Image 1: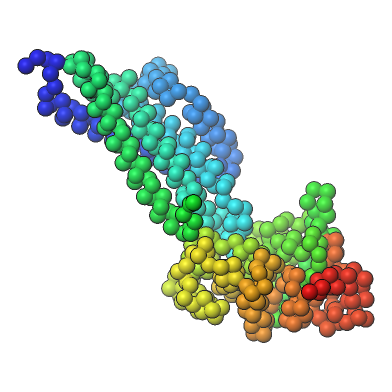
Image 2: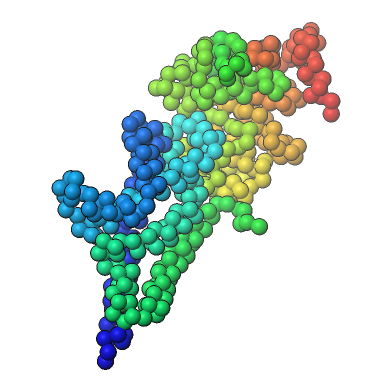
Length: 223
Length: 244
């Protein structure tokens, strides 16, 4: 057997790479969703100082390349703060923060899309600001934002491929390794691309199903 | 007692309320008439604390609505029904009604739901408890809106042009319910364009014109040629309203 041939063990490698990719995607998505939602709530309450800080952070994270952010964390943290970060830690920090910034933007616009009348209708019955947020604004904002959020997550899944650059052995890194060994780029990258596609499709399908459930109250089903 | 004393409110350069005085005693039905832009809705929004007063004082059973701590108590005593219903679209009719009793009054959910169902039945919507607002007609939505306000057992019901967005048939549905409430002795502040109906159910009618109360008279006197109708502005308004 020549070393350029595929072996059945390559499938195991691919599965491991896919598991790393999906694991990091899920972890950073959950962290990003939680942090981004928290930032949106901070802005809803107009907490002094924190609101400005959050807006500034989100602005920076949104408007710079993820790869640059990744390098800053991976190479910058040890240099400036004297803390060593592993490639996986750097990936989790960067991708979570990046996702949080976009979740924040979606969350803020979703909250602002809720009509003032809705808030007033709840306030006149004595609901507190938190009760209004929880029972009136958040459910409607969630239904409004689930579409953009799913689109964001599908994109963030693809963005995880960047972390292979700093040495995380994700699906792309495995693709790289197999490609270098077998010298069959077309086959290797087709398979890798298909796996990304299937994972993204799964995210989109689950998201659409979730959206249907959140919008069950709307009689309008589109044209 | 609900007291409005010398209330002033402007939006930018536009003065909407220019020294309004009004007292509503428990058990009274007071209708507020006036052309569009005369400040009727703003007055209601000042009473339920949605607008800040520039000057003057509003108290609901002695609770000052301009003091945040007292506003919460004042709001428990007044229930608002909105022109455009403002139901929560993601909640069923029943949930719309029980939200505030459960969250604000801390009523047990099952009790609140039983009362909510009874309220819905009393307005002829007993079988629509689980419908979402989008699945209801305008008249049905407004009836849910009235139930939502009544569920808080308010001492004062504030109705802000509650039939303006409805066709005559649906208006009749809603007015029937309001007439029933008036007959039961519910205290109401009723902003409306339904002059005939106001005449039937009100104890008093007030006429708002450019931010001031032009007339404040018992219903009988308001429609008397020597009373409210002696005011040219009121006579003009009523003749226009009655051209049908």
